[in-house]
Length: 346
Image (cartoon, rainbow, N blue to C red):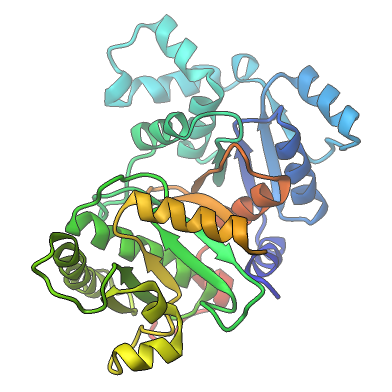
């Protein structure tokens, strides 16, 4: 069973509420229908009710089991506006400006998430990534022990010998162009934490570079090596049991034969399941290359380091991609003990 099917099974036992800011989009409607049909929970679709129903009818998609919500006609609009006004970034806005801002679908969806009226958010199907991310960072905020919000993509492959039964967790592929060593360490820990949460497997984290345990006279190598040390310290601080190594080339990280040739004492080399890219260029290029040149499925971006689960999907995402992203953030909202039972360490 692949990762997404496994997560859908978990949600059938612990269903969640999913808010979609792009409720009028055909792919969102199709994904929402699957959420209902497969008993994963309740989709909340934002947009014009008439337009959503008309689009659904045209697609042959039944809207039963979905909540269709028009922000400007919501009975909670006054409370939503009060919530927005209480956020320092927006406290100087007039009442009219607050209301105009609050009814923007992306903002309204994020406020539903903040107010616990939804368990997970999926946005970005029809908007620029920067807009969706800005709402999340301004309204939701980051976890107490995380300074850096980032994103990850999950690559789910037929080749089960790679990663965690074919699943690789990759970060950061969508937020920070040039992370420094401390930011890379944060990215490594948040990505590894989600990998463990979703799979119960031990994260094996490779901080990637063009070298394998190379010379630190090169600044980019030195950065990755410093980030590796910081990530190990952070893992101890937050109680995350993980193997972390870097700098590693991608072949040393994933291929056991290559790993044996290049280094033999690494707990990660040849068995990595979490890949941390040194910058956004390499992360974005690598994940899109994998997706285009293989049969692997790609799910995300999953926004990491936030207080609430959220995904910022690509405007090129398919309905299946959206369903997969929803399954990931939905399970992110489920307590780990409910997903897998208490750990041996608890």
